[in-house]
Image 1 (spheres, one colour):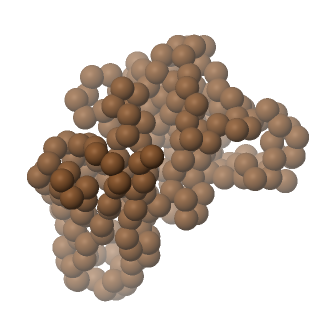
Image 2 (tube, rainbow over the protein chains, first blue to last red):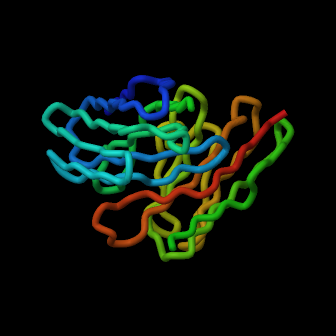
Image 3 (cartoon, each protein chain N blue to C red):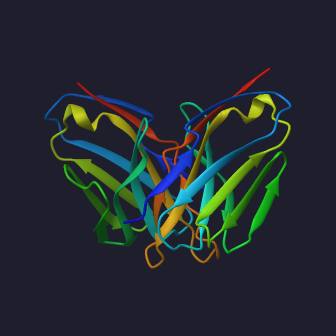
Length: 112
Length: 114
């Protein structure tokens, strides 16, 4: 059974600082997604990582995937308040039906 | 733009009621999914459908059923609502042939069962 663990679960950081959210998963998969969720809202897709070594960047966020280590990271550079949200990683566990297993999420709060 | 809509943003029902949650997509998507989201548990898959009238159980199907009579509409049914089904329900779908099979989510329905 595929398990997906994110850490930290909660993260409070000051504006301007850098930090990394980690997503570990337990069985082989070569496709991973990162989503953002604002309070009371739905999930918004951030990144799709399709292969080992994949790196994608959008603004102050950069995501990477290491399929050998079964690890993805979401790096935040020079955080700003607008990045406050909950971030989820999700791993494909069934390529035929595209079933995903989600991590529990990381609630990120950026303090001015 | 990909658009996935859900019938209600907020819903309050009583224990024992039959509840219908509807999800509609307008982009000819094949795979559709129903999740529930609870604090500390992330999103958990209830049911999914990969074609009209085709459905499969997800991880937590107990107490739920689904219906997909038309390709654009996927309904989640709580046959007899219970308080432990109070949750946020999210529908998602995958557009055909995108390459990365990214799931797009609807706005969610926050269901309270009293």
